[in-house]
Image 1: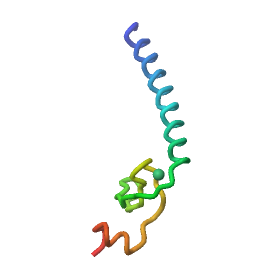
Image 2 (image 1 turned 60 degrees about the vertical axis):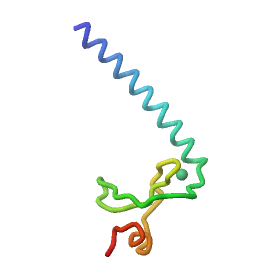
Image 3 (image 1 turned 45 degrees about the horizontal axis):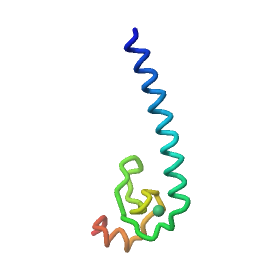
Image 4 (image 1 turned 180 degrees about the vertical axis):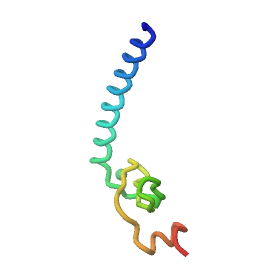
Length: 74
Ligand SMILES: [Zn+2]
């Protein structure tokens, strides 16, 4: 039982940490100018999208030309 309680505390701490890291991440993303990005395949969406190199934010769909340049099309 004691072990379980310990785990719960651990989970709480981890959740808190995730929350604060997410906050930091969104601050970084809101300050970023997204000047460099890479077209990456997003598994969940089953489509390639533009992801900022600096802050990892999804900044939108790639154009046909960008898809070609990144090797996603013919
Ligand atoms: Zn960015």
